[in-house]
Picture 1 (tube, rainbow, N blue to C red):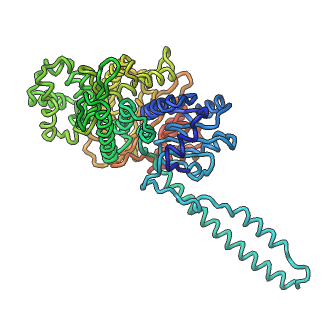
Picture 2 (spheres, helix red, strand yellow; picture 1 turned 135 degrees about the vertical axis):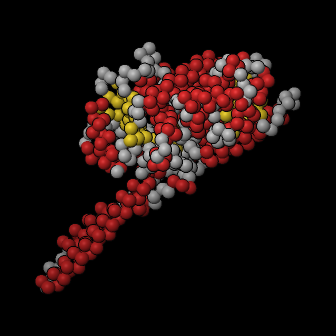
Picture 3 (cartoon, helix red, strand yellow; picture 1 turned 120 degrees about the vertical axis):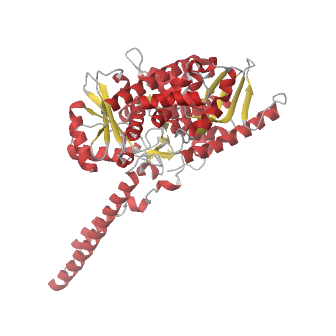
Length: 582
């Protein structure tokens, strides 16, 4: 069931109890649990935190940690599956679900005792009514039918008994027809409800709402909420209008907390658009709301590199072509930005050029098809020199989260990503930024090579791209986030490179080797670029192909548009998917 009041329906329930927190591997979930940690520590609530990547890992973690636990919090995991059926918990255990994945499983929604969903339903979710999905009287009706047949009066004549039986048979037939009609309607409703997967509101900003209602908000907690919202926008999980609504709400929080801080400390001068807090080391922490450019990490990179390797400008200018390279140099010349300056690190550029850079890009954006290049964003100031844009955090955290290797486990990467949010561990954030620059550079080169070698192939109803094992840095795409980012880049680049109008309506599937020793691969699907709301039908399509082909396909990820399979089964899987979608 849905929780209307976060404080009474959630926090006051877990207060003074040991809590098990299971968290998915994504930036929004990490920001959400960081906020929740801060709230729990304030009241000295004991908790156990376990990161989980798949449903299998979630089951294992629950079995290992369930002793003396009565409250389990699931962050960005468990919402889209019947959690009671999967975990088979004791009747006194309560699950609190904070999951931005949609659609939410109907069994979780209508569980009146053990499952509590913290995010309220949205108007466009179209959740089926309880009586259309669950028929509690079905078994009792069958029993009544059989009893009625056996209750023939011995005193009745043969003809009377035959008439009674005829009426009972007709009633049973009507009931069977009604039941069959109800079941067909139920299947249709469930299919319509579950055919698309998408994302709801950020879990991080939901947890900030809890801190606000508990009067425990702070600059750090607000910033973590902002990073969670920005991750959804940067990685294409949410549409622009939803993001703009969240920005308005966040701006209100900034103004409110600024005013509160100003009343508590008259010596601090604060504006309505910034949030400032003096620290023990006299370093001011401030959040500012400002418009920014869709250029990745440009404040920590060179302008030329950021323009070339950011997906938005690379696709808009077709920078993988010779003509696109000429346009890049033309843009720099029109802005009056010398090549020498554009190839210096941003912080080493001439001060006057840095101050004019945003306005220069804004002026030339229309002339060079760089529409909607600007977007409302937020900047974190630490003292006078340290400045980070919220998108910088997103890229750095994704890079840190996906940098597992033989020397570094996934769990270690998870905790490093969480630590990078702490002000005392900015070295981890800076390392993540450097890693992100490497990832974006490699991704551009991979897309460029894929287009040159025509590796983005049309299968009819969709495009597909296979990252061949042995190609440069191919092992990096064994991580879902990086493979999805590559797929989004490749699809937009393919659409920009072709003249076929059909291309804008086609989705793309990307696949890369997951484990060469086990000969397994990842397959991810992303929706067409024309989708105003990023909804994917691949989750349901993958499930139907798995059921029809009986192949050993693992539908284990919390995002159902990500699957794992044997490499040898991939061609057969693609053929079956083509037949299904044609």
